[in-house]
Image 1: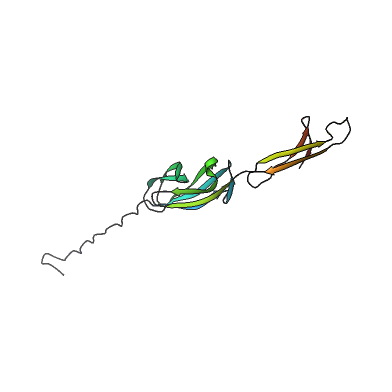
Image 2: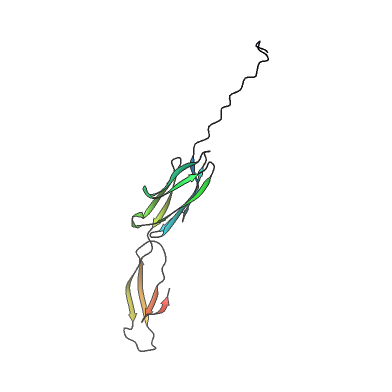
Length: 170
């Protein structure tokens, strides 16, 4: 077509670029070691992968909480589609007996897990008896002892020491 001034020029199409997705920090591959049970006083380690599933670079804080108390945080800057592994150690304390609630969170995601914290074994020695009370060199003795575990499940080595030397163990 013409508009009387010559051939009509094609209209320019306006192309609108799609906006890039905002940063979106997602948590995956969460692992707690040990994953089921830990003895009071021992440490656990929580690891995870944090991935920015958005297209833009972003900054976020990854928070590690134990029983709703902030323990550690890690500031991360990730490009779009970039990921980074994070590690959070934690040493169990006297108030942690029972179920320990573990939470990892970013502004965009949160995951939780639990670990049981158990009392360590604690043995009490009672009713230690040696027969006879006095012996001469080279003579044998009979020794008996009552041992009770007043703590959690577990094992310990029991030794009989005479004059600082270990004579028997079980």
